[in-house]
Length: 458
Image (cartoon, rainbow, N blue to C red):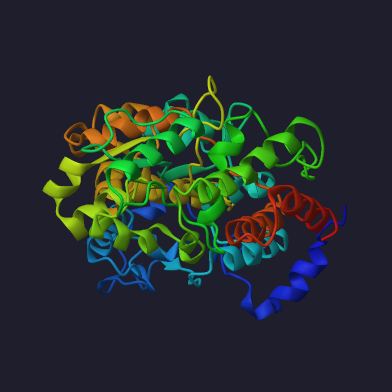
């Protein structure tokens, strides 16, 4: 199989040295210690998306946040949360100014550019990295063990899929600070017990439609977008199957993984052929595209992420959502399998090797997102789920919401997409295959043959 060379990434990106991020291994004038951090500079305290701190502060810390998780967010509650925390941190570290590094909203492009930047030695001191891409940066990430101990954060408290991603032996290499999970939304006023496998799900969908002729039994994202695969990968993974092997190459071109992928693709054909899903799901690229069906009361079940809970409460009122909708683990492909689904989110990685800046970068990440106090406010206003198991017993907003309490089981069983370059090809080609099956232009067998061929020959 053809590999994607680093030089190709550089060519595509078209980076020049002038665009490389400041920070990382940048030399400071003079040598600073922790005692210097508390020195009070002159001037006014500035807290903006472009600069956080005093202009005359001697120590500069570069920070590349995820834009929606910063003061550039379009949601004022998030802006206010980061603003107050950043202000408090700088007041406690007055001789440190934080210089945010701007990025675009295109996550894939940003992560590709960051890989080149990190390789060339120009990484920001602290950087937000898409969680499933985090392992690609492990060799450059600085261990955070001593800093989390000071903040009373136990690495064993992170959910299993997080530990599997961010740990390197005993070293914690990133702070996973937001997460999410996918599951099955169902009309609990029409369905007594949610289905646990695909056969049950299709059977229940038919029963609901027989009693309610104007209803569609099951809706999911089937358009050309990551949600059409990521929301449903759990059906593939529940069979014990892998997308890639230990070398990062395609794993579903033969054997049991190939059989599992065929069953995964046959699921889409079954839902259409058995009449529980309409072909218009080809137009649904994300959950919000399905919300019109939900508002109209014309859908009995849909597959989506936990964020739909609050979004639908805003659309159809809290009382109506709570009375009509349940949220259950994603069904398995077959009976007697363990449910799993894709969990995502974002991590913070400290790239600088400078001892003082490393401690400061870790302190900032913990203060903004990862301490219990920071996690409580950030996940609550941001609509995310906590990243540590113990927080489900600590956060009042979680304890007061049975829907969020139920996600604890899902997160304990969740999986993540493979952090390999080939995944983007697997994802895009699987999206094509799903669309071809939904529209009837190919059978699952034909679509699988094309999928394997296209991935192997990319």
